[in-house]
Amino acid sequence: MNYSPDLEQLKVCISSMAIAMKMESLPDERCDRLISHILYAKEYDGIEGKSGWECLCNKIITERELRDLLMAHCSTEISRFNKLEEVDYGAYASKALSDMFEVALFPR
Image (cartoon, rainbow, N blue to C red; front, side, top):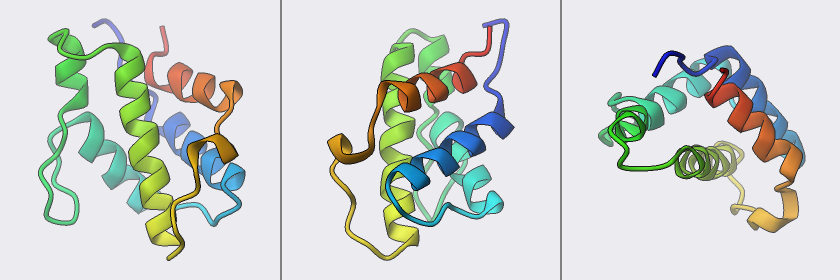
């Protein structure tokens, strides 16, 4: 791939997701660790990384699957950080939010 995810823009996406979920956003450092955990092989809270970017490059998953994987983990982590039950995806998800994540992940 001739591009890489825009990590700063992904943090904006996570913040936008938290707002849509009506919850407090994750601190920057926690966003960095979560993004690295999903996209690369970085350990997070004792759990081995997902290596999502490598899976995408090796055509094991699609761009949409990687976006959905990241969004799902962000939702879970935002809820955990706020010590609240995870909100149903339909309550906060929108095409605009999905598109925002997609543009940040795949800035061509």
